[in-house]
Image 1 (cartoon, rainbow, N blue to C red):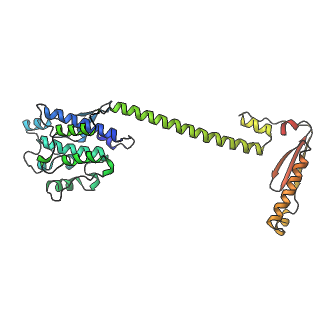
Image 2: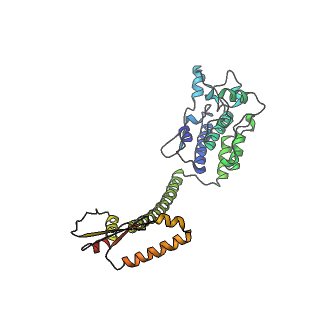
Length: 317
């Protein structure tokens, strides 16, 4: 479960988080009602998630085995962050754990799921500093979880679960019943929720594809219009249809270049309005004259190039 919590590419909405929390509660409720009675070493690293997104709790009963064989392996400070304060203060019984200690450990796992951060990660302290503060309050050292990260009712029973006094912590049966009450008796089916999310993503994707297709069609029309303005109609249509434009040879071709002589000087000596009027009149005259002939006009700044040939009327016009 720790890998899922830390992997940012996995989108965990509240339904997913609540499903993980509920599965941990169900598993611990079963362990506490069984002959084992306690886990003693609950943390996110021994909560595994299977292919159907169901949490499976492992490593239960190990504290009893350690007790029988007198095994005490050296532990890193980070491995004690889920341990209840009363057990951290114990020198001889620190490995055994207790049902109320399991509830405290569950509250830290719940913090990890809600915040998608390591235990006490938001405090910015080292593991040894956190353990020292948890062992010897006041002040009370607990994770800080904002109200925006989960519904208030869930944050409330998480805080009850990490109460300093073991007597003040609820049992897993009480937590389970409170979860049922908050969920109004509804069962959380994470697979159905995943299907709903996939349907929503599919609908959103279809909308995005439609919008992008419309944008592409608009840009395509703009490009086609630009090509039609720059090239002869037949050439433009051939290019837009994806066909190659093959060069053709003609026996007789007339190319006429026209230039406004002294245009720079005229512009410098005239007002902007006079220049605009001059160009409007000149272009109107050119266009009306060109309409009487089978030519193709190419404009290059203030110059004109007209092309005419005996057999190219249908190609250029």
